[in-house]
Image (tube, rainbow, N blue to C red; front, side):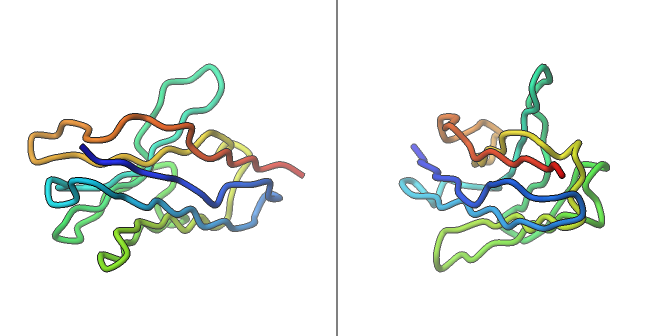
Length: 118
């Protein structure tokens, strides 16, 4: 079992930046990839960005060129740097880990709220 704790959300104006952090603990060795997901009101949860243990990354088309996912393995932490934020980025952002089978390894937490508004 893996536990994750997200932080770093907040209120930011359009065009602004935020950095989210996700600290993982527990069965770290079982993690094949870490990802950031978001869920806006009335919408399904969607993948925003993911990073694998080989450091390969993938992004949702809507955030390419604006968001960057990175990790600090020594700290078991994954970051999501969000630049040029838009109102449509407003959502609750969640972090989770996947094993080699693709199965989610952590329970979905409360996430961290990101609100982009003037």
